[in-house]
Length: 393
Image (cartoon, rainbow, N blue to C red; front, side, top):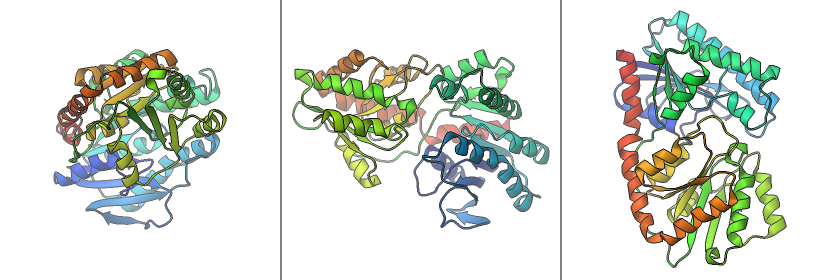
């Protein structure tokens, strides 16, 4: 099978669900090509072989920390760059599957070209963001604005030009059916986040009666950093939770809220680092009692953060602060791998932390449950199988 992957951002030095999938397809003997954006200046031009994978880099400006307008311009330039790369280097190629995730939502012009050039190829959308509605949920612009109408048009074109739309959860599928009734049901299928399995040390609770909870990754609006800080502040007021400690690692648009909170409140139960090396972060997580996930209560779209898989990989119990739209709480309950609480509710946050602490002896079993669930349902072989089935029809 000849597979073409199109990515906004991709790097062989960063472990991601996409890198795992690309490697799995290569390891199965498929001919894999990757066209991907990257802002690193040391990457070669043209078609190069990386780990046995044909790769072409689109040199893009760094999108982290830039304004929304500049980021939008960069994303709108990506389809044109992809078309130029395909015309210059792959004019006589044939592909069986063309797979691409959201973001970005702006790939429609490139897919229109692919539909004409590679008529027999299955175009497979790996849906990770439901944009622009997620931006509306977070107050970035209104549903009546020209910006929304433009992106909504691009979203519908993307769905129309895709032969298959793989959704992260059943709630995603139902959301698309309700809000995009023009999509044929046969296009929609379950395509979970998956990772390559790695052996990790069994989880052992930290000594004593205390609790260590790690929250790593992006610190932005989707994670409702302000809401987490309110919950942590309330925990600090509880005498029975004086030995519960939170460790935040990461950066993002809302990281200033953490810095300002620490400067103002001087909390003893919160430690924050903008970044750690991978070995340092993995050591911190290995010594933690639980990994935290957070979603804004404002979401009306069903998100399913891949961060859950990182915790399952390390047999870590999960403390999930979730909105009402997601069905991740159902997954955590089915797996028996942690505790879910209501987002935007400090009292619920405190009660969830208390439940973790009071059931500390059960945490190793929760972590083991998560690891077994990952191995069965979220290993990268699951999504590689789905792409193969899409090709076979």
